[in-house]
Length: 142
Image 1 (tube, helix red, strand yellow):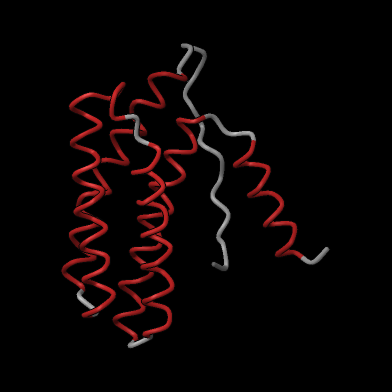
Image 2 (cartoon, rainbow, N blue to C red):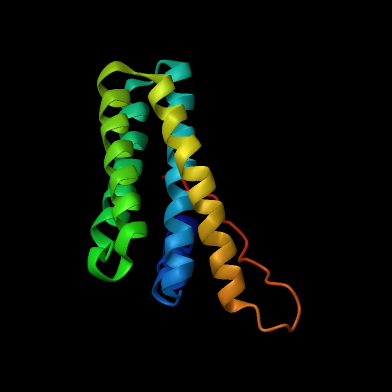
């Protein structure tokens, strides 16, 4: 196996063995990462990279939206759905017009949501036996 295949296998194992809360955190982290990469692509004039990273972010946010349980989640789930739909529209706008501001808006929404999920996750996994140590991030060549 070449190193990238090891990395891919590690990521698959991490995802398949993660809790639902950890998966949500990973999705937020990925969405922020890819949105940032899309912004960098716009700065470089890299249209292919811009489209690639916006599409990756779009897929993640769409998956977050589809995973919502609107019946059990009540008003919170409905508000999250509205935010997700707004972000999806901003991503479409950013992709069509290379609109930095639309991507910055997406990051401004994703960041506090990700932080809130992280706090919820840590509160639910903290057993009082020391602090939580998240797994180390491994850079991807995506």
